[in-house]
Figure 1: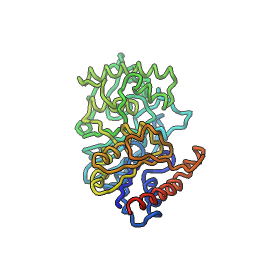
Figure 2: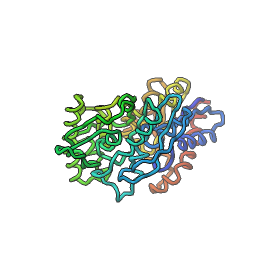
Figure 3: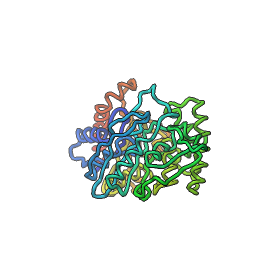
Figure 4: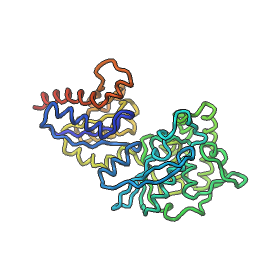
Length: 374
């Protein structure tokens, strides 16, 4: 029996690679004759660049950048020399993981470091940048990125606007005179797993603001700021941006890149599946096993396991999902969803023992598969 193992990470517990390895170990404990193909996935967030580099044979380049609060840190970008392609994770320069809980402040947090990684990629000779925007700490509409790339963003008096969400309401003019032709012509693929618009009850301020430290008052200020910001960007670029699906992702960073650069958004999950060869492997397997930490409705809408399930269904191959926490509402997309927990456990216990619990579950699953398909 040939089984494709293609999970996302169990956030806070297991990388995608470790998750896939634990599933494989458990299955082989049940039947050493299983033929297993491990294709760990990401969908634009943490781990995206490492998976691509490991698969396609690139390497990492260290880059000093400014973190969301302006401190200099050591970051990195992935580099695929044969393709002249840079892989950048926003989380590596402008991510939540870089801040302590009491430092979260979307009014001040800037995406500048991500722009600095993009500049470093251009200086390396990149003709294409894949930008994963998951895990950001910012709700600045990409103001920091634009500044790092050489755009001039000014208020009505001609003064430079503030960093972070505070700058959104101040913006009156965008000037591109100092932007290099190389960045203007570079192909930029924005990998995202969400479809939220920039404005409204499901927009960048309302949905992502509180996750990044916004108070109810800050959410209102950010929403007002985005209304001003989008108007200026549309007037300057002569493009319709307000209704762009995914425009609210990562605090609106895709909006200005699409407005002024050679940028487009793609499903992070589907992009990763193509780069990592998952679509090719689907044609030669009998079963697909995917998963992530929490299998819920979000899994079905843009996340890696949901994309895997849709591709498997299209190919007529059964697909199972494994998680720590499962929501029965997600079960319609899979032929079965399963939790690795074996009894009453605290969240910390489950997360700390996720590797062993996954092996144990997969070994039991393997016994079932062996009896059914012997």
